[in-house]
Length: 334
Image (tube, rainbow, N blue to C red; front, side, top):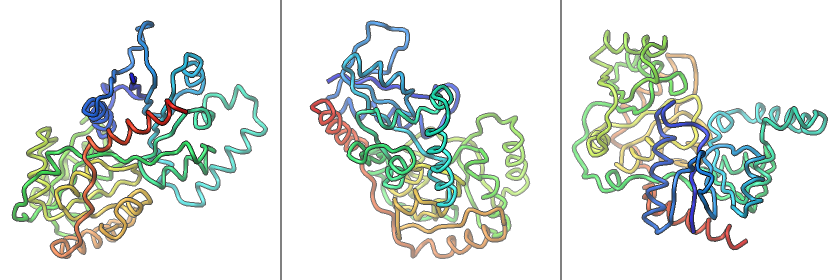
């Protein structure tokens, strides 16, 4: 079995969990004996039995692969879609169905909705995203497989440590992650938060505003940039009072899984991905522009953190690789 990995977004354009997920998937497949390569778009001699595409593969690419006898497994993150309200999702479904029924084919083609119906298998990170793939895009239920992200062994095998005073947030400094809003709430609630990450560009107004606040409030906001040493990051999670991620949209947060593997209590935005993943073993805060409400949720979590239930242990990446290998074998036999 030979597998090619392809992706919608080049790594050089944006760092974050997307890159980690793809790199760890490749490593996990190799650990399970799968021959795997990244797609070389310029190499007409490259061969494969199956393409694992991260993102929404263009429908005509799916057809071309299948014409060559190559199976297609598609894994799109429904980050924004999965964070919408039921009313917004119903509106999206109604509009897309209406467009498909009445609009010219040339207008519909760029959306690549057909890809969900043509791919040999679809991978969803959470049951919620699996439901949306069927509900919104009519992906056949029997082709949808829920396989979550894994966690590196360095987090799963980390050693317990005494808890410090800091809450920890590991996230890109970006509006979607609401890091500035978290910092503002921390100052209001007088709760110390250590924010680990970097901006896509420090010249962005949002990043500049966050950096200015962190400089003004070092008592409550600790910021030293990103930490690439995974062992050091595991130690930080182990010593943290709790982990906080207040994104306004998310798919399945790798940093939340890593913190959970280190037995760190979690405070997450009250969104479906979080509820379906952690259920009652995490705390939740509303996604709101009201800084006072956010500060109240943060303070409540901070005070309760030592007595809160621990998150469930996530699977190791090697186990995820075994699940994907099994899926590939099933697809190739069909």
